[in-house]
Image (cartoon, rainbow, N blue to C red; front, side, top):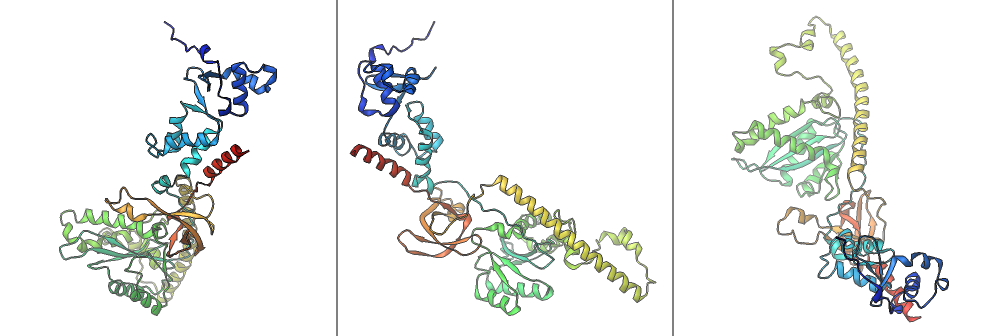
Length: 449
């Protein structure tokens, strides 16, 4: 049994000509019979079969689909988009979802791009967006152990003796790490340990730390200044700059959980063993044992005393002092050559990481410019249950100054300055409603003529 086809013959008696323009007006007057084919454009004659009139309105026919109402005029088009995005049936869904609601009902040229622009410039949607924009990685070429040492504080379960944190330092190149358990994350506690660490390793060139209050205080800053040791603070909410130590936290915690499985309340007791195991395990990026690369000497594992290895059996007690010195010099030369190879290997590995990062992450295509309007990601919401319904982005603000590679100062649109700087990863471009307002203005100007 065949499906009944709609009969449009009774509907082609009149046409609301003022509601249409361009080729749609020509098609309408051609269908209603007010003009012959030679009185309209060739394109209108070609496409006339694609349209049908119903109660004075023009509809576009497509095989197997319900005819769609042709809509002319920017004002009416914006009204439809607004109803399907902002109002009762809208729900501020994505441009794809909004377009999916409009497409079966209406038709006009350029509908997809209009819907996309309207939804992308919706302030409410921008403030609740889950989009994260990342900056490109800038791999660091570190020339030797101690040239860059990262500091950080890891939160731990409270132990039976009241220890709550692990303060650790990890070398950027070798991966060598030292750590201590702390009860409080005060500046004085950090100062004592950092000074002790430096005095035992005076070849350190620079410390890297985040903006936590345990590092950003006069006690720590004054101590680093007295030791002649630069302390570089990374940009807020930019943990990638402190990746070596941030990644190491999970390794330390996992190892502690395994060693202290039946005694988790006393986890600080196992910390030294965990650090030792970390420092004698070869790293993927260097292919070397961190302790050997840090000190420039080969290590002996405890098991080698019971089961002697080649190096243990090779020692010759009859070597003279001169021979020992010559052997040591040869070893030093080999170490320098090996270090250069390791530096290149690590840098190559980081360049590969950069390539993977650029493929997986939403990388900012163009750098932010002074004067651009931006929204600031409300990072505080990410760690709170109560803020789940809050605005993910605040603003808009205007970029006023670039402080570094990825740090900016902003101000309110009324010129009020914001007394802090922001990492580029917390900033996204704010898309104003200027294009939509321009459409409406053009429509008003057209009607006024």
